[in-house]
Image 1 (cartoon, rainbow, N blue to C red):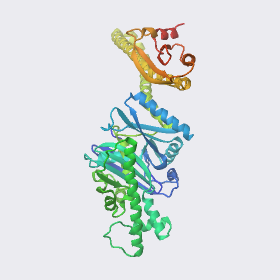
Image 2 (image 1 turned 90 degrees about the horizontal axis):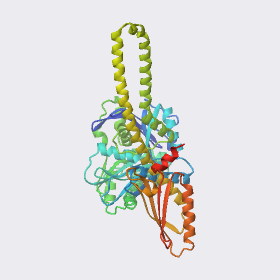
Image 3 (image 1 turned 180 degrees about the vertical axis):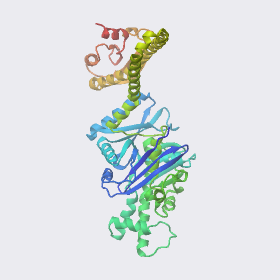
Image 4 (image 1 turned 30 degrees about the vertical axis):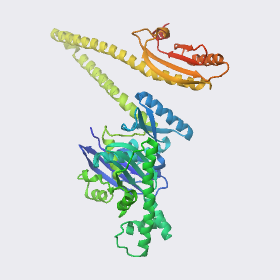
Length: 545
């Protein structure tokens, strides 16, 4: 069910707050506000911010230096293995940066040019930064649902409210200091990133051309700035401003072209060809910019306006006029609110550890706790009622017979629940063994990393659910068995000695109940190791007296 939520796009010059909820194929906006800022860092925008409404549950966009987006091509593996791979990569980055890193990932839609592999989009942000955002939001009367890269919010805004055709589209939100960019083929996301630049490129070009401060340059740009060659210019300064804007527009075109080239190299799709460009954001409203970029890029360039299909009837007159004046700037906030309102949106949800623990607790335990409270309340109420009726029940046989029947019914239901509990317990054991296979693989990889001699290398690694009597796993009681196959470098001295020390180290690092079988070819150049930590007789021995 769609929920009401606030999308927050916080930048260095403005903060946009859009609240509402999804309604069918549209979105109903209930509140909107935009606040002017002058911040050196994005997170500073929370200081002293005042809003006409409390944001409540909110999804906050992050961009620029606040977010690190990576692309990784991986074999198609089970979800738990993919989670482990991404966790290892995030931990490595966290160790390099020396700070806690929060992250989330999602698979891009299958790309026909890539067979047998998936492309993973991994987004990361510093824990401390997200906590500062959460604290600032709380001070403004809101609560963070999640943090999402602005580019992903832009993708969702286009997917729900744009005209999706069978073509390759570059969608760019031009802010003051950053540009959020996504590439799509039809409805499928191909690439997302953020770039340094934006409207500031034009301010800096004007300031340099006229030798004036950046604030004054921004004022001149908004008043007389244009890229329309047919525009009538009032004086020589206006002509100089237009020439400065042309130079900045050239820089912007170069950034967008580099995005397509970067996407080709990152995802290895050399056939990617751009059909259309859509612009939004405050920097996209410069007169004549789409036409100028169309000439530079060689493809049609248009403005993207999702609010043509968005319901704003619930806004008061002042908020409606404000949104009308800043609708291009509010696209990211709309995408964030849409993602937060829907459960099936393609999303990345970066959560600091504290917020992640709270969500996990709510999702996993709140219903059990509520059921327990209701059960205790029911039992207490039943005991009180029973004590009140005790005297009457002792004198009335008919009432006693009815209670006996009720007790028999409860007994039958209890037996059914016990039987169901036994089935669930067996299922839980199977799930535990399945999870254990992942732990067995991870532990073995750590041992290999620590003890595998440089002269040895692995040629094959597999984990199968099968029987192996030699490892104490009979047929009918299959368990996860990890198999490792490797080779030694030709000409290596003392192969057998190296191998024995390696096997000894692996044995010593495995749990006591684990079974290990190793085979070495006569010449010592190849070896095979099978490991199982879940043999039935080993588990029984562990649980015995």
